[in-house]
Image 1 (tube, rainbow, N blue to C red):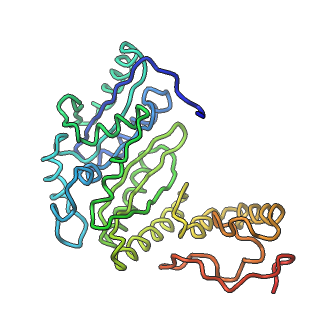
Image 2 (image 1 turned 180 degrees about the vertical axis):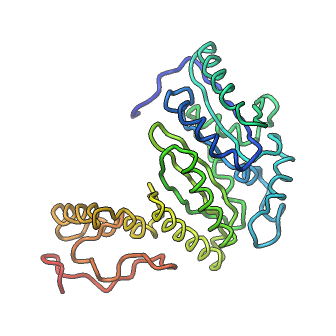
Image 3 (image 1 turned 60 degrees about the horizontal axis):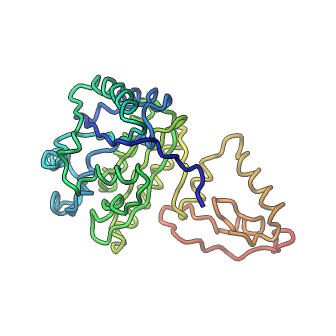
Length: 320
């Protein structure tokens, strides 16, 4: 069974641009927004930091940097210069669909827009080796599944990851605010920053994969603390998560607190009406049944990863 499947578009063509400076971010988002809304940029409009591409090239973190601090900018650019795409900070991975003449029309518009950024380069795919990450994006955008997409998780031993995923307006100033927020917290907790900005038709997602050694209690704790801090920081600026790890469901739900918690009150009312005994996934999405509320089941503490409450109340009225 298939849903919202794309008919054969008559052809497709992947493309990639690189941009040299960290401070190019705001201008790039302003350029991408109208192109995405008008469907000149198709599929997933994705702007990634070079660190994620470096991490996907197969070499572990220790090859580049053996200190517990995040990768210095000098190390990042030295490593980037040795990749097939060359030294840069931001990479745009794109896909154009349609017959050749339609693709050319759209890609010429994209090229003219991106070249407004000084130092912009369009990478010729024919110069890239078969294992370059570009070809992962090419396969995925063509509808071919590919697990190399998650190769960056092997950046550290016993690699695992959680993600910071706030939603924002498609504006350069919002991208800068979220990027700076994430950068500061990653430096605080000694974690390498892997940001990707995903631009939709009405919104932008920043996806930050927090990679850590799951065999290290210290690094697990640092990853969780970093994520919890960023969720709170983003909420103070007016940004909310659109997805999260199960351990952060309660915290994220609590950030959607406009109108004296109107949304949660509404969700709890629905929960109690549709599931009065509280047996269907209690606590999922931060929505607890009446007989669980106020009994310590919520996972909101700095290091809490499990839900260990103090029993439940009566299924009838939520009391002992």
